Image (cartoon, rainbow, N blue to C red; front, side, top):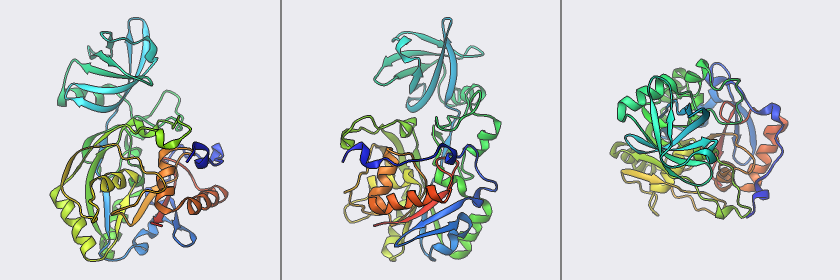
Length: 342
């Protein structure tokens, strides 16, 4: 499979720059044997009592920093924590950074370049760790909006709440699990009244999720690793749902990738703490997830490849053509879809 196999035309005007309000007022395209235009508020009626929605409860941190190396400005986007005081990050301009360089931020906050990688990546060690480092990020960082959301001066105060799910609990992500941005207390109450169950896992989404695929042969692309956890309680709920013959519904591609990484060949899930770099392409045999709620993704992206693997490339090509023609809003702040596994 080549990169051009996953290309499609997307008018720039369809890239959402702000979410709709309220969150659950977004549109939802149901993709099964047909394509049906719906709304996110209809989700309870599209699921069955006993089905299990699996949410990613990661919390986005203000991971974008602007500092100085000497007289020059340096922009930093953290993407994966290495140690309590150390992160891997993407830097601009990266070519001017060398191991040993010091980057100064405001109020005496500073970092040292300890390692330089490929593609603008560097490992930084900060002058503080743990909660003290998080406090400095909250004081000086901004939300790491993806590059297709355009803001003069970067993310603003509204993005602090908009780019966070209402159930976010565990800090560590540098990108939001955007399918979850559509949920409101009212929608969660409607799902509960319907008898739909909930479980949460954690996958700290990295900035690597936005990196373009640069290899013509898509199988040669390498995913950045991300850290995740599935608790004993969540694993038990997932296994019980499967045993009852009900459906596992993943809220977002991040939840799906961790579930599929952990699932055994028999579809059983064990508690898990560790890393995943699972790259799902057409031809992948899904072991666990039955349905997927997800936003509309970039052309030529790993996430569009994933949805093609899940629901079928021909079906998803038709679904995206329909979404473009019908004016659906794309990407992180855009509309949603509910996919049945092919």
